[in-house]
Length: 153
Image (cartoon, rainbow, N blue to C red; front, side, top):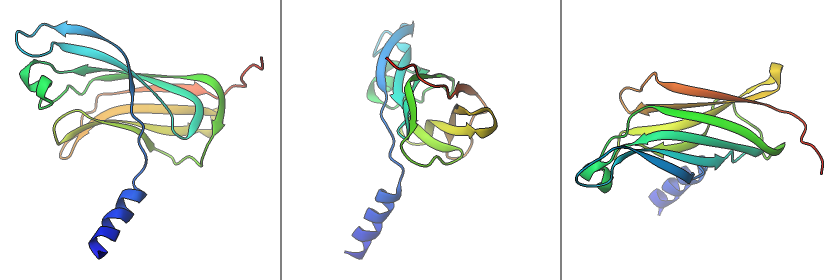
């Protein structure tokens, strides 16, 4: 029972991650067996900042391994975040807080998006990068959203 409570406490302390909604995809490499390699475009809303949506494009490996979820996707990703409504903070923001995470290999590799607040410029900054348990990739992309008043209707 004590172990169960410890595991439950750890699970409850983990940040809540949002899942991305697939917007579209394009095929990049034809595969004879299994799905083709492709670029996927996904969208997710910032869980702590109402009025912000981020769009990710990333490579997804196909073939037999990709179809079974065993392939390792490439580290390249692109991000564009936009103000889609009045910006409202739902909770206190943490510097470098992870707002999105997606597994890009069976076990060891993930892609994540972290958020920073540039108070001097009143801007939200989002960074996407990929890492492994042992060694990450320096490939990354960044986008910024100046916090502006939203027009009243």
